[in-house]
Length: 245
Ligand SMILES: C[S@@+](CC[C@H](N)C(=O)[O-])C[C@H]1O[C@@H](n2cnc3c(N)ncnc32)[C@H](O)[C@@H]1O
Image (cartoon, rainbow, N blue to C red):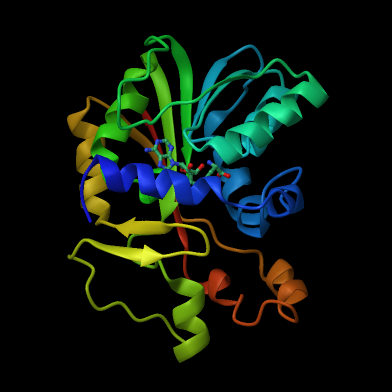
C-alpha cells in the first residue's frame, strides 16, 4: 500500500468513527490514554500555561481540550472531517479558544516555526509516510521547542490480542514494515531505530523515552470486562518519546 490516494483513504477511515464512540471517550480519552498515555504526555510537557502547543493529528480533540483547560494556547491539526467536526462542535459549546485547522501532516502545514511544543499522540503509527509527518511536526517548533510523540511500541504492537491468544507476547517479523488492521483504520509497523534515527536526523535531541506500565490495581479492576489486560502490567504497549529541537 503506497501513495497519496491510500493516505486519503486512511484519513477517510478515521473520519467514520461514530459520534457516540467519540462521546464515550470524553473527557480524557479511552482506557489506554487515561491510564497509560496522558500521564506521561503531561509530565513530558511540564507546565503548559501560556505555552503555544500544537496537537498534531488531534482526532476528536480530547487532548487539546485537556491542555487548554490547563491554560495552554492550543492549535489542533486534523485532516479527518468527521473528527474535526466533532472537535469544532465541542469548541462551539465550551468556547475554550482552541484553533483547529484541517490539514494532512504529510504535506506542509503553514503555522510557522513558533510553537513551544508539538504533541503527536498515536498519529505517526497511523501514517504510511510518517517521515514527512514527523518533518512537518518538527518544522512547527521554535528553536528549543519540544516534540513529543507516542506510538504503539514497535516491539509489542499487538500486545493485548497476542497475549489473549498465547498467554505471552510473540513477535516474528520486527524488521519488516507491515500494516496492522485496527477497529477503524490500519496502523503501520516500523522499527524503533527508524523512529529515533529520523528524529535525530531532523536535528532533535532525545530528552526522554517512556514505556508506560499499567498499574496492577487498575488492571485487576478492569480484568472482568477486559480479559488479558494484565499484559499491560508486564509489557509496554506504547512508546512515548520527548525530544528537543
Ligand atoms: C489513533 S488516532 C489518534 C487521534 C488523537 N491524537 C488521539 O490521541 O485521540 C490517529 C489520528 O491520526 C490522524 N491521521 C491519519 N492520517 C493523518 C495525516 N496524514 N495527517 C494528520 N493526521 C492524520 C487520524 O485522522 C486520527 O485522528
